[in-house]
Image 1 (cartoon, helix red, strand yellow):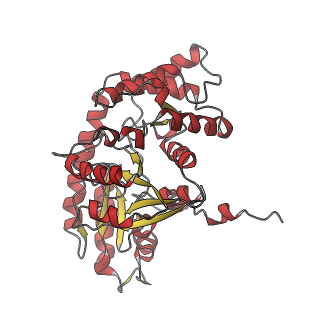
Image 2 (tube, one colour):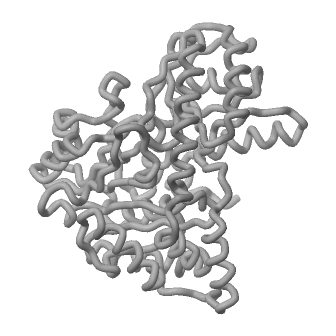
Length: 394
């Protein structure tokens, strides 16, 4: 028997993807499942982006590209950052096979055995495993609903050790939908500079903010901060292009060069066709983004209203992304759907098995006593699923 490596044995499957797989299995058996597990816009990719892909194929752009992406796309990405005050060139951009790949390459380029990465919790499920795959370790810093699920400067200072090399920030955030204000990020930036830390800023949901919330590019906040920050983003969430697998990272030249070397050995290059489609996404009409954003905001309002009506459920209003992260702790110790509920995993399993409502356990995000619901689905599905969940909780 071929033995499994230590690294592979430590890596856990993505909780969100695993939850989606279970829901698909039930649907294949003829069960109606209200699936709120996967963070994927339910809109089609805008037509002008698809046309650009077709044109790229017709023009013969179906071969390998430079390992870090075609110059035209890297230039378009650099241009978008210059608009928000981050003065970079195309050579400071690497295009990868999705933002998750960009995160992996970023971590692989800057941390390794003996290093420590600080992660505020709740956090996106893949952060901890991606860190461990580099041989480094992570420190979780718990945040609370009362703090808006945001790490404070004092918490960040207390978490720093001699081994600390990096902090991972995510705003707008998954799973909470929290959006740090500019002032809050400036306070964190000051700690980063004082402590000689580096930052990976995951800004994949930057265009999906609601109400008065505004997304901020972390690297722009202080002089010298751009030299310490790797900014990760992509087209998946804002342009409904999850399957196109297009993400990127922006950072100091030497880091981007190291990431390019890593990527050249991993995947050779990103998809040529998807890169041309991404140029159309960034440089084309942005009304498609605003249309989606408005619908997500309306769904956010619907979800928060419906959750507030459910017994024993509390939910902070998300300011961005398309997730509701709600408190289920009042139901721990109860028996629901024939199952004694002792933790968030048990709660979500019971909801799926008994009510056919698919959620993701807060434990997967490093925070027990919560569940995450994606509202990147129709209002009909939202109402139907929350009707079922209400009956289940009764």
